[in-house]
Length: 116
Image 1 (cartoon, one colour):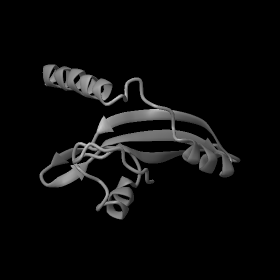
Image 2 (cartoon, one colour; image 1 turned 135 degrees about the vertical axis):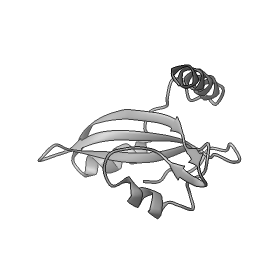
Image 3 (cartoon, rainbow, N blue to C red; image 1 turned 180 degrees about the vertical axis):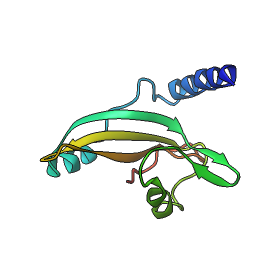
Image 4 (tube, helix red, strand yellow; image 1 turned 60 degrees about the horizontal axis):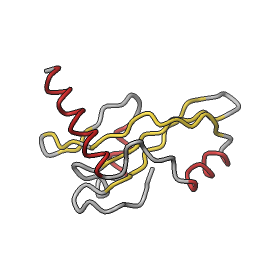
């Protein structure tokens, strides 16, 4: 299993490089502005990856209530789509929040609008 994961990681890296996504781009300014309005800080890229199709459903494993994100965006999420998951903290409690940003459309390869 480890060899398969290593091979996939190398293939993903090669694909990201060909797409101009390696190194990963910065978060779009419009999202940074929204996070700052919320009092957010410490913005960090957590994941850059392709969505995978497993048994006719898109899946990505992350802690929390991710099912709401999938349900609310089921018509927007596609296999092989490149997504970024960004973390940030919101004051006064410094709770950690996440932003899911669609970077590259999975089917036609065109740059796509972002969503959360």
